[in-house]
Image 1: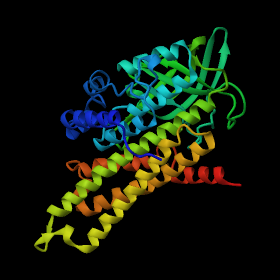
Image 2 (image 1 turned 90 degrees about the horizontal axis):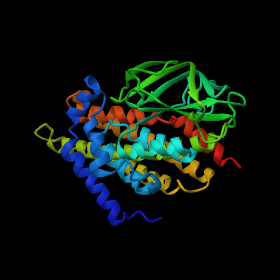
Image 3 (image 1 turned 60 degrees about the vertical axis):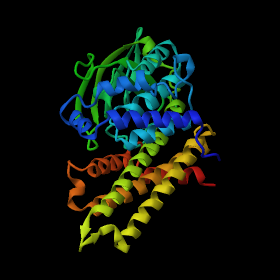
Image 4 (image 1 turned 90 degrees about the vertical axis):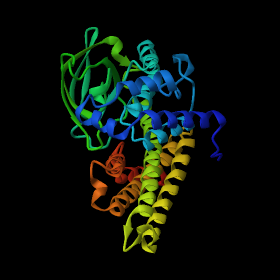
Length: 382
């Protein structure tokens, strides 16, 4: 397995790091998240027009650059290092992934709009009773003449308040937990002025992002809102979510690199008993343990990234292994960073607290540690 980045990938990383270093101020981004629109539209426009990262991993047929999993890893890690709250994963990985795998004229149009920076997506899949099982769906879609009528409820639809388009997973056949019978529907969306038939309850999440709970009551969509074939969406959902897990795992590596570096710098500066606390052997051992957890996470992410093109079973095993490894490391590194900083580690003024919240959210995003341990066990059972 070759871990060396190409010249082009290095240029992509350096360009993004330079852009974020010069333009993405943590205090300004948190202010926008807490009291503003929840994001910075000018930054998103820069991602599209100046950097082109919104299309870096999308096909050339929709004006993308045709990049692959390694480009995704490079971008996600740098976004994590800067603690970016803009909806890159929800739009470019999840939304575009579902649209690309489903196909169709409407999907192609929205993909081009994503590349141009004009469209943002949210994926409505989790339900109040489904837990972390994405194929446990009670939301239904039924034909009514030339239309589809959707009824049901979705929870924790991340980035929905920022979305221009909503992708809804609904059951058009089969039983509640069946993989077959799941369909995807695309509709234009504005959380502040939702279409008739959608009730929206929006909120800010613990990691300074935004989400919504949605209730569908007789939501009527045109026939061409259906993405792909009726009842055949599970394969696209499964593959897309695995790509999203790989992306947030890479993002967490960027977060953990920053947290560890800041902790080491703090330990060199903070004085106790007349000497830097970094000179105490017990704290040195603790920071070495943090470094080892980070290195294991980096290796797990490399394995996951290079397995995205493999058969489903191999891909899923590598993704779940990476999710478990990264979740464990995120908890260990985040908690110890806060502890080594003392009480100020959880203050709003210090970056460590914000990174810790994001790492805590990543631990449970797209499935908890227990969920992925069970998934890995099922995939490796003789």
